[in-house]
Image (cartoon, rainbow, N blue to C red):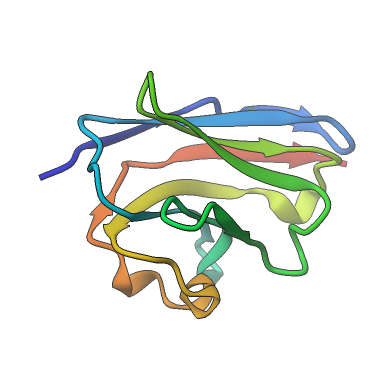
Length: 127
């Protein structure tokens, strides 16, 4: 079992940046797929970034491409999501997720494949 704890959310103005963190209780030595997802009361959970440790590949939807960046620090077992040029439509609860294996780009739209989830951190962007 892997526990995930997110932090770093907050309230910012449009155009500003935030960096979210997700600390894992343990890391696997094998390939792993890590992801960041977001959800609002009006929309289904959607993926904003994936990182496949086995191939070092990253995947982003068009809404996040060029603005968001996912990265990982293996020493501290921390997954990051750097979010720049934030927009009001980025307002949501953000969750990190993990599953053993290799990521597929399609998983951005299929959060149900992930086994482990954090409790979420709220991001609010004002115009």
